[in-house]
Length: 211
Image 1: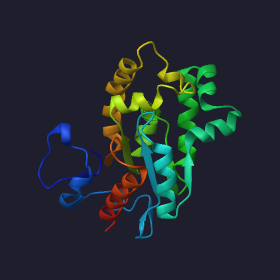
Image 2 (image 1 turned 90 degrees about the horizontal axis):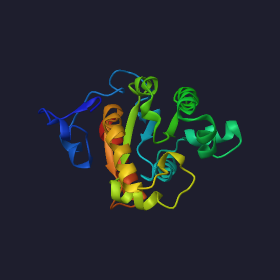
Image 3 (image 1 turned 180 degrees about the horizontal axis):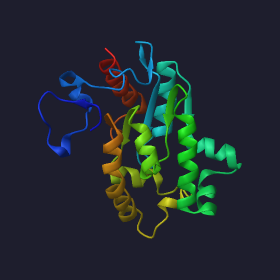
Image 4 (image 1 turned 120 degrees about the horizontal axis):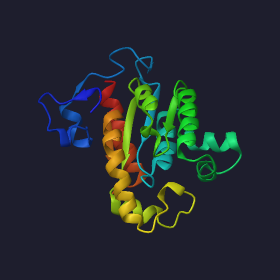
């Protein structure tokens, strides 16, 4: 867990804050350190991370409206730069080169005030994780089963192509989940919630964090 903690130590497996934690937490945020703030009204930037199919873009769009802040999707920025879908850029460049491009685009986007949605694999890059230390980061999470259901017919994500989509998604999450946990302050689970309910959870976190 980053920057937020309960009064009592948490077991490592439950260290991330979720909605039920908000009343118990004590703030030690980037806001308290005077970093990345928008006056005293709230965060200048909220970053969303999470696996494919979790709903980051949809939630980011709604959250940006709720906070009256611009919304940036870094995958869309890559598409604009290369003039083609992000999946095609990934396939043509290969993952190592794509991650370099992605890290550069994220580094350029983060200083902008707004709600910023990162690609699912962005946290694999160490320099990106280091940059996220200065920002309020929300992990938009989803179960393996639901993630597979939402993405199984999506051919635009080369990183998910596999003979056994469920096993591949599970392996992907085994690698990425600890990294999402490392950079995030708050986690919202989207399996059984509407996007608006998830936005409500995030707004409650933001209100508590900057109270």
